[in-house]
Image (tube, rainbow, N blue to C red; front, side, top):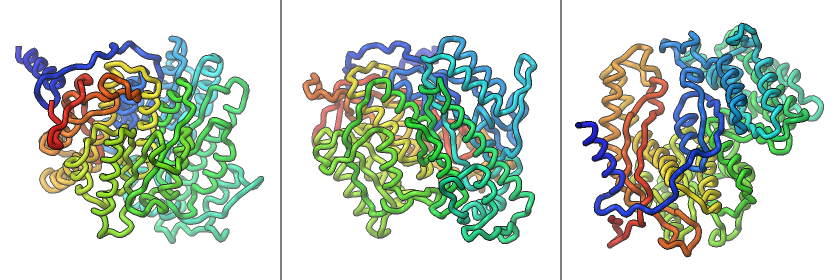
Length: 595
């Protein structure tokens, strides 16, 4: 009885939004869409539930393997069913073949997962991996790769996106016994300039041979970086393995039958210095076919693939965009892990999505507003106030808008507080700012361009609208409420009260229930104003101004449940989001929206 009452109360809350009588818009019911078989990079929220939301907002159904098959476990945490810290290569190989046998014809496949068991393990693995299939056959990683690609290429109806990465400058702390001292030492070693190769000199063999050389051609001494020869040897072997696998992929798809394959490579955490990645990036770029792409960012690869697949399948012919920067630092890397300036990364992503810069922002179809780091720290409020005024103008004029916070935490909570108090957050097509700066551009533009293209297509359903609301709410709530508010308090609580490490709740083992309880309590307190803002927001339902409601719909209610720590660490969280159906537009009186 209590469960039925709770369910009824939840339904009422989701329907009524911010209160009053709910008028639900009559939208078509959602039918099961075309299926995409998806092998994630790993089990973090950016690679699982947020990809599901994006796909569903575009009418796709995402099919994933069982969680244990692609989960990453940090040191001292319980192992996966295959008794490792990484994904099950053999089971994933067979899972993809099962999808093909069942008639699937759309695939988004992370090669780091399929060939190394996930992004983290791909950074640590120096040797060839071999597995045993369920029928007793043994296969090496390269055989898995070739067998899988050949099987998918045999069906000319398949559309396949292969996601790959350029290995970052150092492996992951807290995995395979790797510590912070080793990380700092190897990152410094990797950030050193290498001899620049070009033309016929640019080969995998020459790149690997120069791994140990500085920019002047002299050998780098591991002792200068507090490293041993063995540590450097293992690091370089892992880099070479990763590069060889990427090269094998690019060589394979050059063959007949791979015309419907796309390779999308992301540059993992990097450096503005002439680092060890420089020749790798140049080589991989030289190997790309038309339709293949190499861009900054790895954790946003699946977003980009889903969005680009949708654009291609709906006949997207591109659009015009106006990009406006606020903060004055767009000509610099947004953080220490970017190898390009912020505006260069933005331009490359605009090209990827077929967007053309407009010199007249008033005439552009799509608006992109970017907050950079403050060029002058004491002018921070001036910068974000200017952006907020531009956002209000976009709202007033009905211009579809993407918002990117590339401030890298330099504005504290002031920017988020001002946005919550002064703007209609739910009006945005997309927002990104939570994760590392290397991926915020791809995340925001993937979601924003996909949403805009969906509006251009002109057809939508109840489920697609709810999934869109989830994509936006997830990004805003985690950034505004968790990253800069709840997480800071939680880090101190874990260290001081629980005596543990925020980076791994099993090393040393701590009271994980207490950490979860503190997370739930903190999020309950921190999310109230942001959720209220979203519930009182209107958003673009149709680009046709003749739409009976002026093309607008009102947000329904929002319910946040099942908070969790996917990797048993405090860096990121997962949560379930429930949203009500699209409502008649909220009305505004004296600047306040009401139902």
